[in-house]
Image (cartoon, rainbow, N blue to C red; front, side):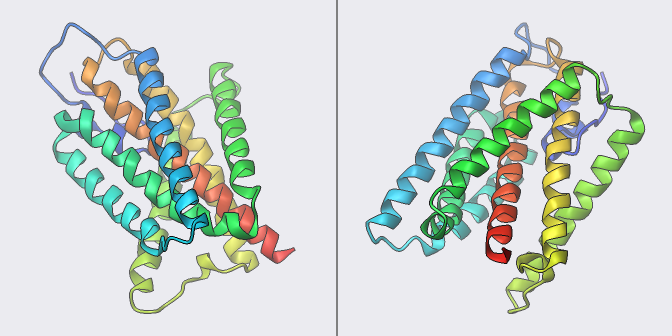
Length: 244
């Protein structure tokens, strides 16, 4: 059966869900939540480990960059080898742990409580969006879906171009503390949060229908969104702290 692509999360695209193979066990919400919790635990454990290494004087300069590159490579492999998700997703969680550890360690030096505050805001945002979705205060219509996907795609394109320009020593506007940079962060954080709506909607549509192993793919999708939202919130908080 042809499944529709209803989310901004690339992992929830048609590619991953068009599968003629059948399985007795089906994807469940409980299975997705358990796997997501385990992956977040792995990521958090590595982040704390990197923080301790940084505190002890270890050079973690390349932890963030290495973790980010590894996460990108794993994502590319996963996009063409979905049946490897049961071990690629944990590897992705590890890579993101090193990325977040390196990224947040330097923030923690100047603003010790900020990473924890960002975690708190991320958790609150997650459950707020879940509440809005479950109570149908916000309904995921075709128009809403289209707007979120379009804006998220544009945001990722800006990040990609900025990342490429950085290799040539060109620093784009999104990395500064100008009002434009802060405004971009606000928009990015807002649509990172809104993309949860599409993920929840997709999972609800195909729970108890998709094969069991695709819980790993759904877990990966949620992991991508949660980490993206956390990074955007932390970057925004840092910029506001510097600005004010």
